[in-house]
Amino acid sequence: MSARISRLLLAATAVAGAALAVGLVVALSRTSPPPTVLPVDLVRDLLGYAMPPELTTARLASLWRLDLFFALLTLAGTAGYAAGVVRLRRRGDSWPLGRSIAWAVGLVLIVVLTQSGIATYAPVLFSMHMIQHMGLASWRRSSWSWAPR
Image (cartoon, rainbow, N blue to C red; front, side, top):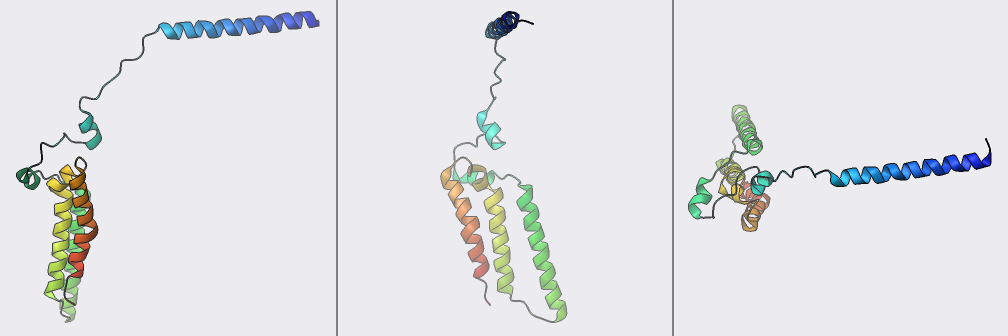
């Protein structure tokens, strides 16, 4: 094969490749874009539930949502603590009632802060988020430290 034929073959291949690319661009520019599926409710897609109504005290107390993780965690904490207290009593040791009450208050705070209206509004309102955050981080822990020794 001579050098001239090689150059002609290379040029023909380049022109064919360019023509194919131009044809592909033209074909793609004339097809309609896929239909855009808009979410019916963006808040529902982000939160997993509809936007809660305007915040009132009654709604804060009544809009409870079951959070299975924290419900099971609380039940496990209750069962474990009760089993420990029963074991101590059977062994003949006493356990201060104040500690049991403090433990129960802490568990009630976990349930209230993770399943009540506070938890419903926490992803939407920063104030509710901070009440939930500080409650879980501080109030619950401090309720367990209030117990008499």
